[in-house]
Length: 467
Image (cartoon, rainbow, N blue to C red; front, top):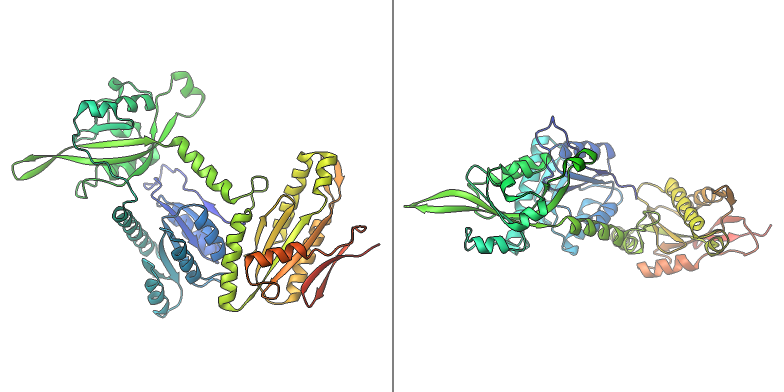
C-alpha cells in the first residue's frame, strides 16, 4: 500500500512549528496532493496523503484524523463514497471537500452530506487555512458538547494538601506564566526539585517546537472559556551533566488540562493565575500506536493484514455494486513454504515471504491493494477491471515476476507458487464468497513447475502443464 506520509519537521526559520492536528489529504493527482501537503505541513500540522478513496478508508480506520481534505472526483472511489464511509463508521473526522467543477452542484451536495467547507480548485492558501481552522474549531466544540474531553473541576485551587497528594502532575502559574506551585508528582516525573522550578517561566520546561502552541493555551486565550480541552505536549526533564552530553535531553509526553483562575474585586473579575493538571502518557502513547499498527498490519512484510484487507474489499464491493463495475481478487500462495521452513529454517522462509512481498509490490497498479492474509497467502484486490484480458495480463506479469529463484544466504531457492482468482459479480457478491473462491481456484499439477494463465469463461484459471 503506497501511501505517502509527510511529518512536520522542525525548522527554526518558520514561525509555525507545533503540531496543531492530524490531516489527511485525499487526491488522485499526486502533484496536487504533495503540494497541498507541503503547504499544510509548513503550518504545523501532521499531514498524510492517500491517492484514492479506498486507501483513504484504510488510513481513516487505522488512526484518528482531525480533518480530511477530500477531492470529490477520483477514479477509484470518489469523495462522496469516502464521506459515506466516515458517516457509517461514526468517525469524528471533520470534512473539507475540494472540486474543480465550476457549478455549485458539488458544493451544495457535499455540504448537505456533512462537509464543513467546500473549496473550488485551484486551492489558495488563504481559503485552505481558513477552512482548516474552522473545521478544527467545530471539532473542539463537538467534543466539548459530547463530553469526549474530560474536564477537571477545581473546587479549591490553593488547597495545598489535596494539591500535593494528587496522583497526577499539578502546577499553578502566576499572571506572568511563572511557576508558583508544583506538586510532588510533578517533581518526580520531571526530575527537578521544587526550588529548581518555582519562579521559572513555563516555557523553560516545554520543548522548543511546542512553545508557540502552549503560548496559545496559557497566554492568548484569556478571552476564551475558563477551561481548555486536553492537549498533549512534551516536557523537558532534568538530566545529569554526563547524560546530557551523551544523548538528547529526556522528555515526557503528558496530557494537559488547564484552567484560568480569577478573584472577584467588586464587580470585576481579575485574573490571578493558571491551574494545570497533567498525566504522563509517554508509555501509553507508544503502546497505543504500536498496537494500532499491529492490529491492521502484518509484522513481517508490513502489508495490510486480513482484517484491514477485508475492510478494503468490503469498501470496493460496495462501490462496485453502486457503479455496476467489476473487480477481481487474486490469491497468491507459496505452496512449499512448509518444506522451505523444514529444510532451511524459518528465517529463510521469512526471507522468501519478504521477497515475494517486494516482488508483488513492483507489479501492482495504482489503486490495487496488496495484503498478506495468512502465513503463506497473499491477496491482491484489482478494482475497476474492464475485461478478462486485463486480468490475464496482470496475472501473467505476476507469474513472470515471481518465477525467478530467490537468493538467500548464498542459496538459490526455487519457489512453488500458485495464483487463484475470483471475480465480482460472476464468482460471488460478498467478501467471504470471493475470498473462498479465490482460495479454492488454484488449478495445478503437482509434478510440474511450469504454469500458464488461460483466458476462460471463468475469467482466469491457473493451471500447471506437465513437461
